[in-house]
Image (cartoon, rainbow, N blue to C red; front, side, top):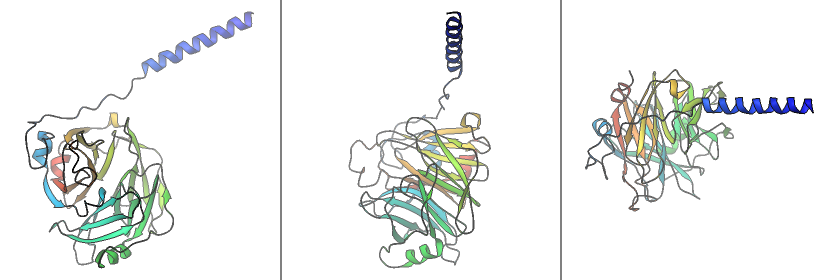
Length: 315
């Protein structure tokens, strides 16, 4: 009986300590995002998202094939044709059909080619070291040779391009971006913060995982990377506003990182940097959402902002 009494006391004490520790460990503090706005009209459909957004962004190129596909990921391809011309790449999906990659010339806004690839939600696309990396089925990343993608974009119609090898399973591929020989890819989380991992890119396109996850904002849909910053677009729901986060690189814990957040129009997706300009993609102009009165902001084109106007928020 004495042993039982001691055991019961130990268990009671352990339970009390566990309860105290649980109580003492706070949940993530909510990140404050600037929502100050006139609420009136602006250069895009629907109500203004925020003063900060409207002061920084403006209209850019139209996105093709919105009547059939829904745009998701965005990436940049420098000197794509060997003559010094550059492309913004947009990946788009259609349930039960091939996905597509669009090549858009940022200097003219014209679509130079459309390529079909295997079906996937294609939440991310990025270019590095001779390869295009695209989000595959589930949590995976496919790779495509840039030489083959170049030929396909130059061909008439919508040629089909197969991936090289098998898709690389990763922790999450809802969004992705690259900087130098590093690819960053992570998970979308509707109810809490997601995670992102860094992968080193070999010449043959092999990805090697680096240890330690990066914490990313709730509902992250897109990512672009500069030397000193991560820039995330976050959104979920056609009637909800989006947010743009500018986060100083260096801290994997989001609460420890210097950051700034401001509200954006509904349904942001991929974001990419080209020549000092950020290009932001929306899915709201797609046939799935454009005619729905619940869609707060119907945006059928990219928006653009200078990178410096964003990174200066977190110097």
